[in-house]
Length: 162
Image 1 (cartoon, one colour):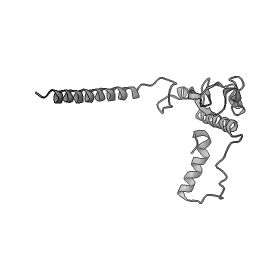
Image 2: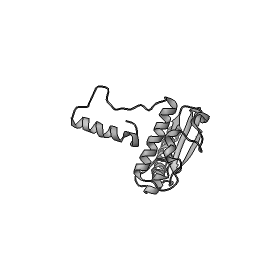
Image 3: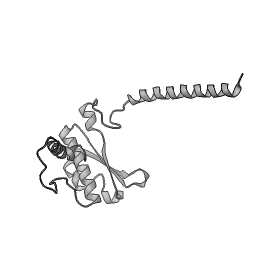
Image 4: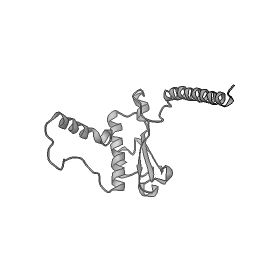
């Protein structure tokens, strides 16, 4: 009986079983969700989705960003409807500026809050909000791709930067 070969075979089998068990655990964990935690999901009800924290990392010290009671001016329109959190970002990477609605909010409200957070980040870091439009080379040609780009550019402030 070849002992080293038998041990190698047993180790290979054990490795395969552990990998299979780990895969099963990960598949199950993927379906476990805590309400209000993690990334937004299309399966969340609108009230849970509205209560999620939206955050940006600002490359400034927390004292330069503001306080929960006096957030950056871009969030002024929401100050009575949102909770604001300003804390040091992990790994000394600046400041995490986060906000979430205290109560129910529409999709439009959530989009406007996301746009306000990005605007606050831009104003704090650069001093201005950079815009895609007007296109420096003039109007886009009326092609299907140009029309698609126009619609995506219009939705970008609420849904994210291209």
